[in-house]
Amino acid sequence: MDAQAMKDRIGFEAARRVDSGMRLGIGTGSTAEAFVRALAERVKEGLRIVGVPTSERTARLCRDLGIPLTTLEELPELDLTIDGTDEVDGALRLIKGGGGALLREKIVASASARMLVIADVTKKVETLGAFPLPVEINGFGIVSTLLAIERAAGLVGVAGTLALRRTGDDPFITDGGHLIVDASFGRIPDPEALSAALHAIPGVVEHGLFLGLASSVMLAGPDGIEELAAD
Ligand SMILES: O=C(CO)[C@H](O)[C@H](O)COP(=O)(O)O
Image (cartoon, rainbow, N blue to C red; front, side, top):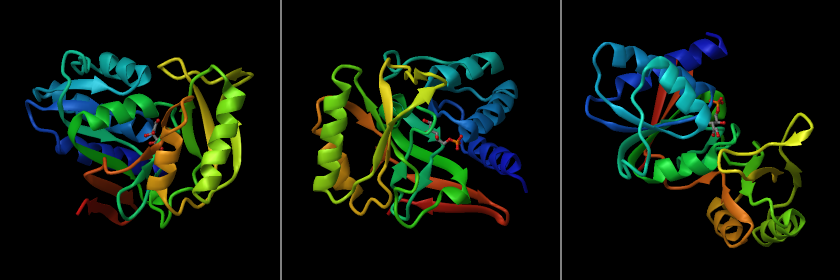
């Protein structure tokens, strides 16, 4: 099964977990898009849901496919968020933000009673950190913020290069108008400590460590779907 077929399979399975009447957070990325396409088919067949998208990109796709949308202002509490991930460990801790939507993704997941994560098996890791950690930062005082990130990381035993994310020659700008720094720390032995250290930096808007948010994870592989659930 090729990569797209695995995404389509997991997207289809995730869409089956959605019940009529649900208030749904809708994730961002290629796996989330496969879910959106499968969800749209169910909506056409009569499934009644209302979704809150985690990015402008997802909002556009949902609108094109006829999925009813609202905002968190209108609907501040959701039943379920379904989203992809860049990495997941055995404790269901995630690194997200490869698509640059981590801030809205985290706000939406935090407003949801449950978060179902969908991915292919290659995203499962022993220890988080092979995927560079996206850190969303304010545009003011970037150099000071980068130095503070380096210092904070050092205090919790990680180090590595920081790269400002770009789109061509220009900095990548998030839906919230911020910048993203991709931090290649390698192995992150204590994600909770790193999360707290990054949150203490004023220029850091949010980071891509999603800790204690995922309730379950469905991983598609060549032999079928593996499911991991929080204790
Ligand atoms: O966090 C994300 C976007 O900010 C995505 O969910 C993550 O990057 C996974 O994307 P894909 O399904 O395309 O591999």
